[in-house]
Length: 326
Image (tube, rainbow, N blue to C red; front, side):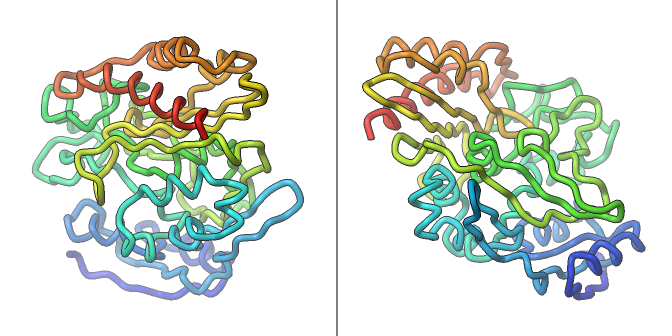
């Protein structure tokens, strides 16, 4: 690992000011992903800015929404009683991620910023446009079992690894950030990027900005929700495919639906067309089969991940069925 300096920031303003002065500086909080990247030589900052002292750990239930500080621990959010009652889809997704020990260290902001687990990205001897632009994509034509089937490009077929982010995309969350130009907010579905020809850019956060919080509006998805994570083992494994479902059902009719998938794209994959189809439909196996077919429109596989074209609709049907039965 490259030698580096570490300093401690005591406010969002000082953190932004510090990183603006250093071209290769990076923020560190839980470090559950960044330290791994540094050990592998994938990321080599000259300076780390420790932001654990910032007042960004609160979960605040405000009128019409919840505000979750960027430094709130994943376990803190997942185990919060009111989150479980009012935003159960988020709690389920967080509980499905990583291990209990990592959830005690990982932060909400860090979870959003974690990088792909593509083996070519982590191996500095292999080509990877995300790690080294214009070097090639080893996964295309290579080992790509875990890789994307939506929104891919000739430059990259990596997937975003987060479970939490899939739920936040489904719940219409927004991201609040602060930088040298001031404060701004982004829709959560606009925060992460598809690879295009710049796969090295994971998100639309400016280089010197810091995430301060995430806000989720109140909703009716408190009962008929489910987070399905299909993986190779039942603990501490990333999703082959995941599905976040929220349904508002009255008298067996779906008034509103929210769906998003993980493990299938460079960003959490929101299924807005499928949501619109489900609105006003009766709960039935036929409805869910058609929804699953619609959700998979445009999917493209790359060899070892061909199975996702079958696994995907099956997972969607199962998640919708379980959510509707609650």
